[in-house]
Image (tube, rainbow, N blue to C red; front, side):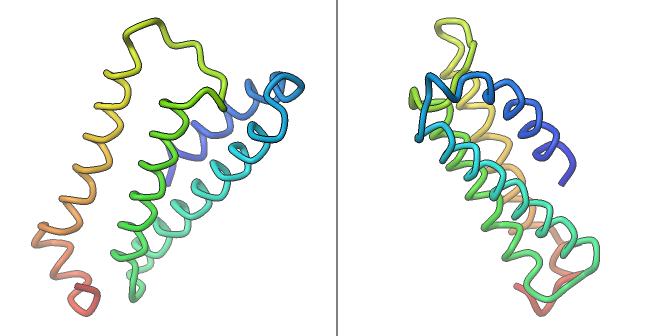
Length: 119
């Protein structure tokens, strides 16, 4: 809810300079990243408000975020300045982060107790 919008804002501001080179695919990726970040914020707000379906929404937002990260890291459509050999580490870290949160939402007693109707 906090890091994703900040991350997208920082990367989008850097990517705007590359639109002339990246063209339409870069614009599409910027829009997709903004939508996924907005979806994550909506999921976070639903969790904080203890809304019905919040856990499911959060899981879907995490899956969308992981898929977007993988696409950005593994394709040439979004500019990046990672050193050679760093991409597998970044991909592993991203997948571990997202899987950890999905696992927490699935296994946590606190989440089950708070969102009993959502499981």
